[in-house]
Structure formats: C-alpha cells, structure tokens
Image (cartoon, one colour):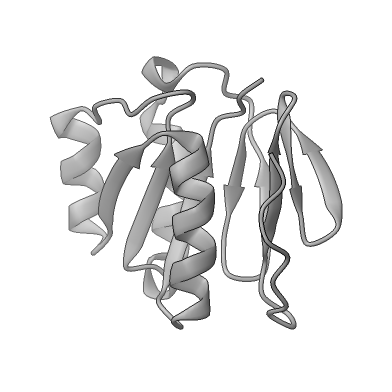
Amino acid sequence: MDLTPLEFGEKAVIQAYGDGGFRISGHRFTGAVMVFEARVLGMELEDFADIAAADFRPLEEAAEEIEILLLGCGSRAGELSPEHRARLKRAGISAEPMGTGAACRTFNLLQAEGRRVAALLLPVD
C-alpha cells in the first residue's frame, strides 16, 4: 500500500509497505526492518513470536534517540512478552505493538511531530 508522500529531509520516511517488504526514503527493503530517525536496518525475523532479546540490541544501543518503539506485528497486533517489555522499559523505551500498516502510518506521523520514534516492522503481503 502506498502512503501519502512526505518530505522530511534527512529523516526516514516509510513510503509504502506490502508485497513482503517496504519502500523507505526511496529504497526497497525485503523482509523485516528496524527503522530509526535516519537509518534502516534489515532484520532476520519472520514472525512476531520469534522476537528474541538480541533483536532489541540495536534499540538499546540507540536508547537516547528513542522514546517510543512501534512494533509492526504483521497483519494484526501482537503481544510483547513481559520480559521484552521490561527490557525496553529499562532502556527508557515505551513499546506499542500494532499491525504493520498502523505502525508505518504512526511512525511517519510521530516523525513529523519531532518525536523520538523507532519502528520494528514485519512485512505483510
């Protein structure tokens, strides 16, 4: 699905999602991604239930840049385990699980507001 094009300068913009990937700031990414203010990391993650503690390491390393983590769980919202939620909270990051489409739209909106946001997004078809 294409989203309304936004211009943010150096900030990452999620322009489209679907077909197993994302278009972010003019670049196509296949599979899961972690999106920060100005960079995108590809991830080896296929299912929300498979998220491991090590998957949060890049977020913990960038914790000063992040107040909100949007978790795009696929076609619908999932639940983050209490252990993962506590780990993120210790780093000062609030986690919000939701469907991937909602996470993409919310990421762009929060970026536009100048919020410190990151997103971990699972692809949808």
